[in-house]
Amino acid sequence: MGTLSLSDYEDVNIAVPWGHILGRWYGNRRERPILALHGWQDNLGSFDRLIPLLPDYLGILCIDLPGHGCSSGLPAGIQYTFVEWAYCIGRIMKELKWTKVSLMGHSMGGVMGFLHTCLAPHTVDFIISIEAVLNPVGTVWDLSLYGFNIDKFVEEEERIGRGSIYEPKSYTLDNLCDYLYESSIESVPPNRAQHLLNRVMYRSQLYPDKFYLLRDNRTKYFNDLMMSLELGTEMSRRIWNKPYLIIKGADSPFITDKDNEILSILGNQNPEFEFHEVPGTHHVHLTNAGDCAKYIVPFLRRHRPAPKKEEVFLKRLHKL
Image 1 (cartoon, rainbow, N blue to C red):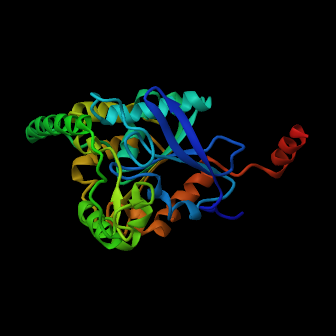
Image 2 (image 1 turned 45 degrees about the vertical axis):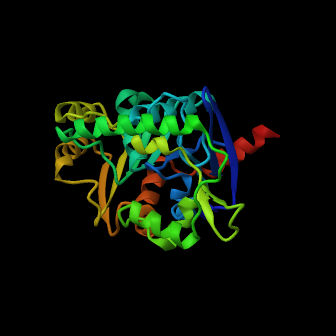
Image 3 (image 1 turned 90 degrees about the vertical axis):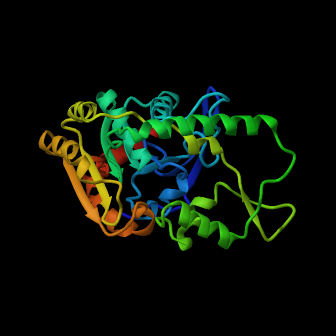
């Protein structure tokens, strides 16, 4: 068995009421793929370094979430939330006529997988979550952040409504790589930034040696779930007997002791639950894909095993 190739993909265009969700379907396109969901402010390029390490008998459908990468933003007046993004899983399943879904998510994409699974566990066969469990428990400070994000969202909507005939401000490629490094809290090093820039970066018509970013800035001002520990633990209890792999970057603050109770519930009620820590920061699947794959590949081989030779032969015979 070999591994997937980044050059072996088919572009996917999924119609939604506000436009389209775009993606790339890597590898096996004869059977239902694993649905890969990126994190906040990222895009499907987030999985570029992990894809080539995964078994080639599988298919992986990586999508750009609404407002990210090349996918359409939500309609005017609709603020982004984790719940709105999580709805996309069900929409994709309906459009592609899936009754089950296999989920792999990073950060926000992992939270989306958690939300969907606790609400519709019968539709999920397994979850892989990189650097995510569930949103942290809400605090009083969150109220101020909610108010700030609502005000900034309205400002951004008004700016978009005024329109502009001018090209966005442009930067050198090195500047953009440094910007991404800083804005990701030093999680995406400059030598890996290109993977995330490819789908949002455009060459300037005014300054050919510079580039500008084109994306929905309203995504910056989303409002999170107002989570309580009681709600989080109840959601965790609804995910039982479901293969679930969580990978944490050792140098990342995104999974902490505050998640221990939820992790404990997931582990105690589920013999198929795994938690592993590997060296790296929040974008560990981009910076240390090899160590992530050491746990992901065996998990995939157990829960989405390669078809037996007899089954492959019969399927091919049936198509003749």
